[in-house]
Image (cartoon, rainbow, N blue to C red):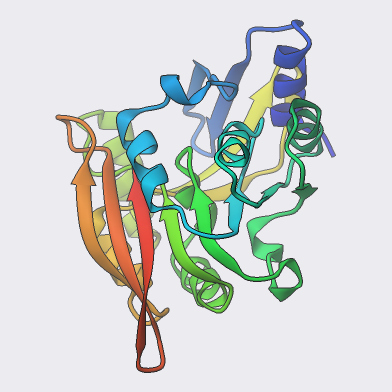
Length: 249
């Protein structure tokens, strides 16, 4: 299977390219951007830096990319297990110094990895939950494996782009969530597999976590357009209350 994302990271690491990532949606809409997956912590957004205060215990870094978050947490003394479905991303992360990095999808996370104080999903990786039912199923699994979650997403309603608005309307007609996209990653002549990627509003996030053992507790805005937010959830285990956090960007 082709690995455009991993190839992009490998090219960037070895100085063969500028890291241009192309995302193609199933309606033909294409976005292209230069993604800096190698950014040191001083170049992260303010909300990403603040969210690190909420990390506790052993960490699962979901969708680690080039390992920027795992590397920063290792420097701070955390034990980190980093996962990514891209073999190229795993190779890059390992070469940059991530100690425990594995080729694995979020869907394959289970008790064999052990228990985590924090599940971290930076870089809009809340989107990896994909769709309504899948999100609830995976949230239920994570409830048994972690105390808290810090995850990033974007509000799909915070736009005036007519193309994006039309896609959201099409989704609703098809009984899909407004921010659910069918996409694939492209790089040069490579194209990855199609997958569902989910963006949600705060209200939708609250609906998703309800019944899965998590509750939204707080949202923190990150920019004037209100597209980026930090959310906090509580996790219930029997009669005891633990803490979980969702970071939405």
